[in-house]
Image (cartoon, rainbow, N blue to C red; front, side, top):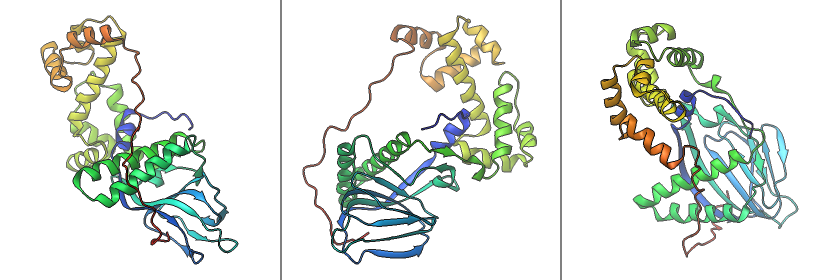
Length: 304
């Protein structure tokens, strides 16, 4: 994946992504599997296990091979069909919706149509789990479904070399970008909602609504969160005193210490000592999925 530089705002914005699974199955498709040009309102993932066929996306024809993982986004013009009679696709597949606030995820993230996963066996395991939990339908399964679907999409993004972002499809991108840049530059000042709304060209009440929709926080909450992020950095990577850090953020030291404790659960001094003891550059171990449910059945009744 290409290295992309974004503000903390847009990182926060992307964490608002919602992936909602509608169906997941394994299918050995019939010879009648075909659809002419149409525009689905949902996204598809096809993980090809065997056979031959084609998919057409926005006028370009692809011939998936076993081991390919295809992402067919909502809103694209699509078609598909079989080739050469009876050697049809056997594939894991799912349909899901994806939104970030009011925008479609794949209007913001532009991804390739397919990848060849680095670890197909692990991907098979994840699809089997996705199928299994989608059929259970209980409360805990809904959490597992979201987790697995996010993992599959994270793998797709990480293993793609053609990913790029187009935040200008997001309403008010440029205005909100100006606001965030201003906040970053003037964290040490007294920032008012009225001033920020004026920069965006919005009425203050409307500005608060837009800001919270994109960040999940009110402007004041976001400003204080950014102040604590900067404070964390200064505590770890500089020798500045707690009072000096508070002053650099335009805060009284007592108020700064109370806010820091409320947000992180530690006093600034204790946080610095804890990070110093644990090592600020330590890297957490990568999580694994070592187990899968015992029971999986291939489904042949849904030729998607």
